[in-house]
Amino acid sequence: MSRRIPVAVVATSLSLLAASAFAQAMQVASPPTEGGGNAERAMCGSGGSDRAIAACLRLLLNPGLSDDQRAVALRNVGFYDQVRGDLEHAIANYTAAINLGAGPMGGPQALAKTYGNRGQAFASLGDDEHAMADYNAAIKLDPKLSSAYLNRAALSAQHGNRQQALADLDLAASLDPKDAASLVTRGALYARGGDNTRAVRDFTAAIALEPTDAVAWRNRAIAYRAQGEEEKAKADDAEAERLNPRGAIDHEAKARQAQASGHDAEAVAEFDRAIQANPMNAGLLKARGDSHLYQGEWDLAIADYSRAIALNPDFGEAFVNRGVAYISKADWPRAGADLDRAIALKPDDAVALLNRGQTFIARGEHAKAVHDFDNLIRVAPAREEAWRDRGFARHALGDDAGSATDYAKAIAMDPSDQEAWRGRGLARIGLGKPDDAIADLTQAIAMNAKDGMAYHFRSQAWAAKKDLARAQQDDAMAVRLEPKLAKR
Image 1: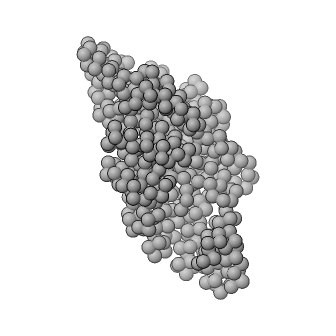
Image 2: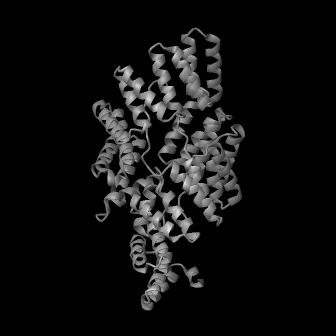
Image 3: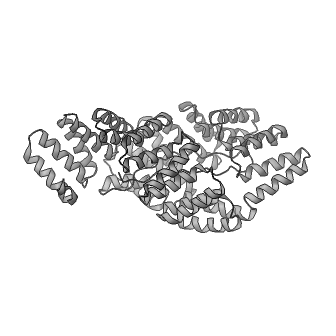
């Protein structure tokens, strides 16, 4: 299986008082495969680069695009527009995606995130009425979407509705107790109201979760100073400056904006300047490693992740992404070791479980892969690739019935996943259902006419029906597309 590998992303800290949270609605997609439509779909979901935006726009020009594919492309373009600051176009694209409904959007949770992002765009334009309506709609669709409560709290605070803001922040913190951003925002709101005791409590809890968050340290210094505890305030100011000197803050902000926009070479240059001013910041090193990773600079990425881990031996996201870099180099033992460490630190880390499961597949350890995908489906049942990849591993273990069921679930979640159609077709051959297999493999070929393996499998299905002429025709096409199949 060749596809873009999901990586772990660390959210940037909120600024001082009641800032809004940008809940990314995008899903990481497979990388381009040969064949027009499937390649465009994959590139459209592969990141915030100009190439990705262009791919989404080309997809949207296709009158035969399904509602599912159109909704995802519109949502992704809206996200890219929002990151780049083109808020009016972001709102227009989000609206078009929302109008297609929850089904094409991938279900109520995906639709809720899109409402949340559109609300943030409205808020950035000063249209608070529409922003509030979108946050309310997001929460109605997904009452567990903590970012929507955080955004609604920010808006309520701006309008002086402190009690509503605190109530929403309480909910956000209860939904995700390990989200330092909610605690920092609530602490800032307590401080603004003069309740510095509670403010210090929240900043202290945030620091316990994110010890390298300079914003939390600076905010706690402000609260300590308001209480007359000058020595504690000076100590926190010093720690905040050590973690992120003020001279590095502008470079970090520019770097993260460039990275979010897909301009990774520019991001690396800004991270270089930020790291020069703050060489002991593990978060900056990890972030620069991400931009190296996105550019295919595996060794440079590994070097940055290794430095980050040396500074913070429990930096789970750095272990995940160093594992991804090792996967890209086909260094399976090192990849496995890093992903093992990441999962030991956080057993329910969905990105680590997905990548380790795929690593087990690459190593032929399919039973272990199934175990990881079982856990991944338990903690993140909405991840379509978990079902698809478990289907692959189950087929390798001879469980064609389980494989077909998993592939069917993946197809229901993402009808444009060509690999899932091909995989279910193969499983159905094993189940003795050649007609169903041919239907699935014909769909896979329609989505990617250069998929030699799909022709190869369909040849087997035709042979099972004793239609040797069609079997030979498909086999010849398979070998022409992938000459290595001639040896099978």
